[in-house]
Amino acid sequence: MLELLLHLTILSGINIILAVSLNLINGICGQFSLGHAGFWAVGAYSAAAFTVYAQLPVPPEVNLIIGCFIGFIAASIAGLIIGVPCLRLRGDYLAIATLGFGEIIRIIIMNTDSIGGPRGFSGIPKISNFFWVYLFVAITIIIIANIMRGTHGRAIISIREDEIAADSMGIYTFKYKTMAFVIGAGFAGTAGSLYAHYTQFLHPNGFTFMMSVIILLMVILGGLGSITGSIVGAIILTLLPEVLRLMGETISEWRMVIYSVLLITLMLLRPGGIFGKHEFNPLKFFKKKGEVA
Image 1 (cartoon, rainbow, N blue to C red):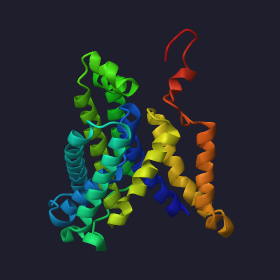
Image 2 (image 1 turned 90 degrees about the vertical axis):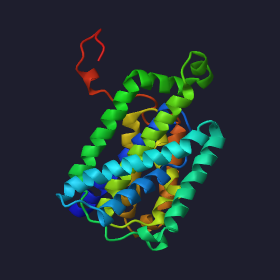
Image 3 (image 1 turned 120 degrees about the horizontal axis):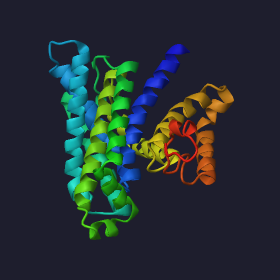
Image 4 (image 1 turned 45 degrees about the vertical axis):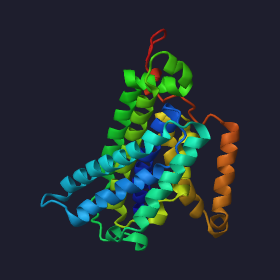
């Protein structure tokens, strides 16, 4: 039971990085991307290829850090390649384009024998653990939170609120949309590196369109634009299927139906997500009357 709990905790951490990074694109910048699993795959496979074929004669943890950096850079480059032509589109057109690119990445991986192709990529060393996953969770949250609070973050949020108005005020909207897309893709690649070095096996079927939808559900469930919401949404959607599976054979058979009904009910009751656009601020419980936390 403790092993299962640790396993779910580590998967929750990886999903938090994925959800928070997608929230930068979809929630904070307001761009509808459906290709996040593709960037996750690029980071996972590039980092795994490094540790399998070219790891350095240094402690394994150093190779993990290098692998996470490689995953970030590879996914960021993929995000730039996809973002430059796609981010001139809006709404449903952008979603369809990013979905197509995500599937292209998966098909390329499936047809590359050096990283396993359709058989899957095995032999990856297990370096990632609770400490490293949650260290990168903290780094991801701190960086994206600071982006939101800075000048660039305010420009990105203005694009979400009204892109035409932001453009008319002199904000170079394409530049900031691309920046959000590249950073979000990069952190998805970091999550991929951690995932690869935890599971020790990668398969193209683990990075399908449905995985992009599940990551998007985490963001929507928690609240578009809320980092706190993305964290909570990632934890809920990681634990809920397993909790239903463990509640007995009868419930286990219907767990996906129950899972879907619970999601629909929650979205009907809280259409803006659990946190909406708000953040959880523990300092507000300690502030004096009239003070701002």
